[in-house]
Amino acid sequence: MDKIIINGGRRLEGEVFVSGSKNAALPILISSLLTSEPCIYQQVPNLLDVHTTLKLLAGLGVAVDRQPWLTGSGDLMLRAERVENFEASYDLVKTMRASFLVLGPLLARFGHARVSTPGGCAIGTRPVNLHLKGLAEMGASILQVHGYIEAKAERLRGARIYLDLPSVGATENLMMAATLAEGTTIIENAAKEPEIEDLARVLNTMGGKIAGAGSDIMRVDGVSSLRGVTHRVIPDRIEAASFIIAGALMGGEVVVKNARPEHLDAFLIKLKEAGVSIAPDEGAIRVTGNGRIKSVDVTTLPYPGFPTDLQAQMMVLMAVADGVSVITETIFENRFMHAQELDRMGADIRLEGNRAVVRGVKELSGAPVMATDLRASVSLILAGLVANGKTEVSRVYHLDRGYEHIEKKLMALGAAIERVQG
Ligand code: EPU
Picture 1 (cartoon, protein in one colour):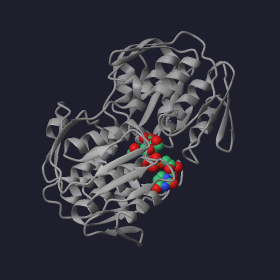
Picture 2 (picture 1 turned 60 degrees about the horizontal axis):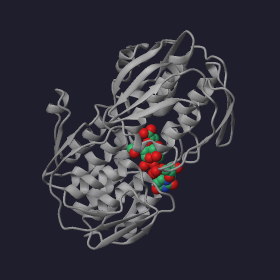
Picture 3 (picture 1 turned 60 degrees about the vertical axis):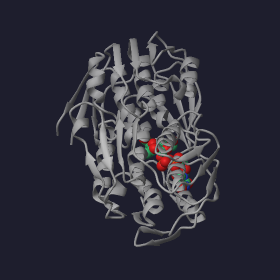
């Protein structure tokens, strides 16, 4: 297994380009199942989770042309003309939970699907009850047999669906299903993340009729078929923010290009409160590491609140800030596993249920640490950059799920970082 080795303390300086968003790309690639026509996607990041999605789609019978993508144009073409398998296996769904999103599109277009339930996850229980409740309300018959969801519906019909929580995945599954349903679907308490809006843009370009994406109430008027699309995936706001934290910790001046400040409001406000100097530029965010950082309290919330996917990275910033910060995680029950690893590097973090009390220390010290999930792994890289001496991060396959060439990008900014093949 590969490891990443960092010699901390190097100042970062220069420009870094943000890749396409993982969490926008995954549902968008899956939405190709809704049409028999070719779909071209641009700025799709070359990541493990994208490879898993392509494997899943190819297994269903989707023609995948990744040649232009691999040779650098960034375009990927998918065509779901001859779908002949309607099952997503446990092996794939347990590797990547987003695989569960094939359920809505398969059911809507072909009338049946068999998809493994995802099971537990390192960061929380993450049930799929809201996806299933919504599809049942649209008329699907749903059975759970031997760990699989077996769903059928001659044609889904529009329904009024209230989500108990604004779940990103449930909103995506249901909005995809509703595009081909008969009649109108209203999703109340829908998730409002920028990735939802990007998926809605794709579906509307395909001929779908979605209004209100990005607000609490989404209306989907069903149509009888959808056509192909060419779409450029939005930049990854979580990757952008991870580089902004790297700049805050170690800049110099770091210019994060291809970033959308409007997707990062809550995060940028918190960083300014912490005394970090940030200047949104057209299509870029400039961050200047100008000395000490002040502690701020942070509570993760659904968008537009502070993203849970930035909680681990923010904890590193707070670990070396002046004062005491309380970080409250409200989205997932078990998303503090990085805290113990940061403690090994000299951080002072006390966990109290869903709160982490982080007392800033003068300095972290490099150590061998273990990544436990995607965002935890990037937080350990950030900690390695600021720590004194050598940090060795193992289990970096978690990192490869969601960060494209991160060590190369950090190296280009001046970090002493390398990947060692194990
Ligand atoms: N939930 C339920 N029932 C459901 C669905 C969700 O109780 O049917 C709960 C979950 O257990 C969780 C909360 O609702 O406690 C939020 O889950 P949500 O469905 O919103 O998350 P997701 O769709 O499974 C996506 C991202 C995550 C990100 C969350 C929250 C993708 C592929 N994944 O997951 O990204 O943390 O939204 O913003 O879009 C990551 O990239 O590292 C990552 C984990």
